[in-house]
Length: 134
Length: 134
DNA sequence: TTTCTTGCAAAACATTTGCAAATCG
DNA sequence: CGATTTGCAAATGTTTTGCAAGAAA
Image 1 (spheres, rainbow over the protein chains, first blue to last red):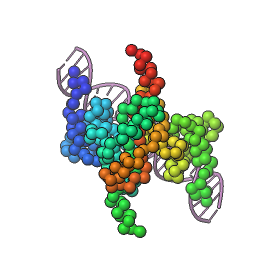
Image 2 (cartoon, rainbow over the protein chains, first blue to last red):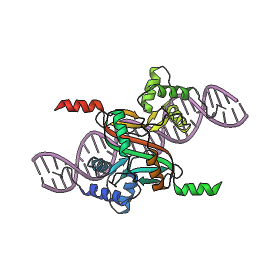
Image 3 (cartoon, each protein chain N blue to C red):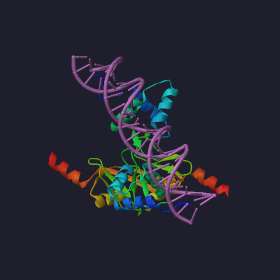
Image 4 (cartoon, rainbow over the protein chains, first blue to last red):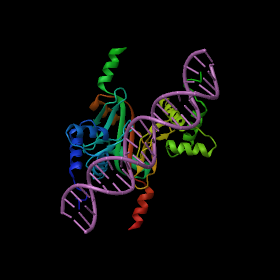
């Protein structure tokens, strides 16, 4: 059998592409980078691999702005902040306060397994260029 | 001209549908409810209206699980929690601690305008049925 | 009249699926 | 062989667009 649930060549290659990217690429961007480095896989294979990798917990799927999911290879717990001026996405490592999680638990009765936080704002660069404009 | 940026009939009707829904409907669900109450608008009109309402700040567009955006008419600042067992979405009103926002500001240099938080976990009902199972 | 909105169909885009061929154990 | 993954093309589902027609100022 063809290695049930293991890192086949496409899966491994795609994982490496994501790990080497620091900008949360979309499936289309992953396709591009694969092409650039001479590897070619079918779109279906890329999506299959992305789903597999997500289910295995090796990457994270992010739904930020726009139509397409983005993929994140950084497994440390972290969040994201998107600049509403230029669309740039940065990572946020400040940890969610436990006190707040307790509040949410007692408010909702849920067992909380994970939080995904998306901040929206204006990045330092755009704040500067706006300040100079006026 | 046809009232630039005003609440035309479709926009108002759609806003009311969303306000009356307590489950963050998708565009398709909004279409259904419009049909149920005898109103018919083109899909394009519904999407145009949703974009308009979002840009005006009268509703919020949510990208949670699944393919389609959901729309939220509750304008109080709040967040969401989705049950990974049954897919149910609830609202969370516990406010993000200011201290954490300050941390994020100093970490990123962004001016933060908004936060969207999506918790994932298991809702009380599903926790119960799981406990009873075994 | 002028500008904006609506409706319809078609287009665009992201993602999934069906199935045959390839692959590994 | 037997289970699984891959590749391709076609299908699906969501959202947008082009353009003619309608409505309000």
